Amino acid sequence: MSEDRSVRDLRLEKLARLRELGHDPFSVERFSQTGSARSLLERFEELAPKDGQDLSDHPISFGGRVVSYRLMGKAAFAHLSDGDEKIQAYFRKDELGDTLWEAFNLADIGDHIGVTGTLFLTKTGEKTIHVTSFQFLSKSLQTLPLGKEKEGQTWYGLTDTEQRYRHRHLDLIVNHEARNMLLSRSRIVSAVRRFFEDRGYLEVETPLLQLEAGGAAARPFSTHYNAYKLDVKLRISLELYLKRIICGDVPKVFEIGRVFRNEGVSNRHNPEFTLLEWYEAYANLEDMMEMVEGLFADVTQKVFGSQQLHGLDFGKPWHRLDLLTAIEERSGITASELRDLDSAKKALQRVGLPHEKENNLGGIIEKLLEHFVEPHLQEPTFIVGYPLETSPLAKKDPARPGFTRRFEGYVLGREICNAFSEINDPLDQRERFEAQVAERAAGDEEAHPLDEDFLFALEGGMPPTGGCGIGIDRLVMLLTGAQHVREILLFPMMKPSKEGTSQPD
RNA sequence: GAGUCGUUAGCUCAGUCGGUAGAGCAACGCCCUUUUAAGGCGUGGGUCCUGGGUUCGAGUCCCAGACGACUCACCA
Image 1 (cartoon, chains in turn brown, red):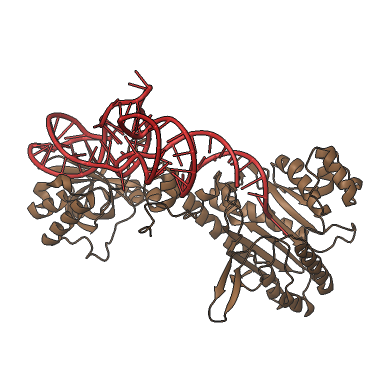
Image 2 (cartoon, rainbow, N blue to C red):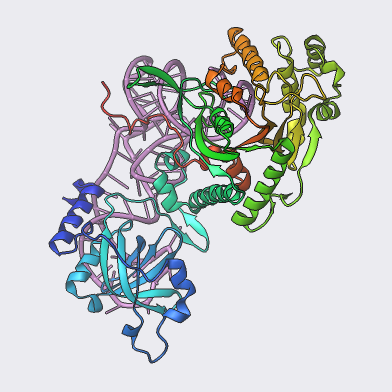
């Protein structure tokens, strides 16, 4: 009895029957098309036969997924989608013949078919392909959660977040927003790449597996290198290798790559994310600011056609704000209070923030920045002059002991980039690393490891260099307005679900 | 790591006071040659997340667990 068979069984039976009829859906390799669904609709006047013209003079062909299917005895309508747009197709038994009609009756929503015919307008005025012949291009063995829609409203569909993340292909088929996020991300990355290429930057690739994961403060993932019998770490930043390339007299380099930080997950943090870093010899942090401004102006214009986005104007220079000045303006805590650890802790206490566990002046200053200043940085703003202790790779500011030539960029209250004039004094860099090693010994698991290979490169001589890093995921979130980082990651990490788990043992 | 909420048909969801499970769509069968949330008639479909407990009886109440969502914490 048909009731005992699953949808998949029934589809397998249809597949077998199609093969008997000589219409094996999986034997076809290619299908030539007149154009996309969108272009067929847009070029309707040009492609459709005029009154009195022979219909067969204007054949068009189109391949897509069946997303709706209305069978009416001896005629039928279906909508075919290429993912981007859909177009209606009209089928008649008397024109297809018995065999092809039977094959059509074995079609399901979800199948891919390729049709040939002519464009016409239905009674209700919809641009439609009058199909004279068609072939199966694939058969779907699963029911797809394709909702029905009318006048912009959609019924049913796929809304469960877990299912959307676990089975992203369904999300892409069913939800246009998911598709738009994917397209936006791709276009943004492409525009970023072109921005640097146009300015003479060389794109490079550096190792993901490293003996010491440096360049940032974060806990790494570990894995094992069988060939060398070595435990290695997945990179947490791109920085040190890129600067070793600068030491090799390649003056402008950039990399867009995955980095991995073995840390918490939130709506803005994913352990695996994409980082953009670039370095330019003979440039400093002011040059990096101009690059950031130029990058945002260029990418917004190219991808969205406007530099005005979310009420922000990326055509204007960003605000520039000294870090200590910003803290004083927002919290009342003065620079002199932040000159030593004891008075800084008292200041923390005064403003009601936890202070007992603080033993790092730089850490306190950054905490104050986060708490008092960051939420107010809605318009694009560079905060300049970060503490020495938390900036082990940035040049000292000669004008201000204890601080570095480093800035971070903020938009809509969120950190978007981190840049500095790079340390090129190998002795200074060694001292900073040693301070980090001491921090680590004191229990800071995220303190920077000492990297002798990097120091060796610096000792060979590195020109003055400016460098900057931007989280691509943050950038995409900002520009698309995505509220969760998982919306702009195609396949976020999910714990195995019960249905995905094999036999329990 | 903490809190809150959730998990019922392929999808979206109901399920009252504890009494052996419901709708729409999807599926299956029949009818239907311009439909479009096509329509008409009919049919089938459930490990109610898992495991315990209370009870004559649990989708419902209790305990534990899994997974997820959101918020917070963590996070250069």
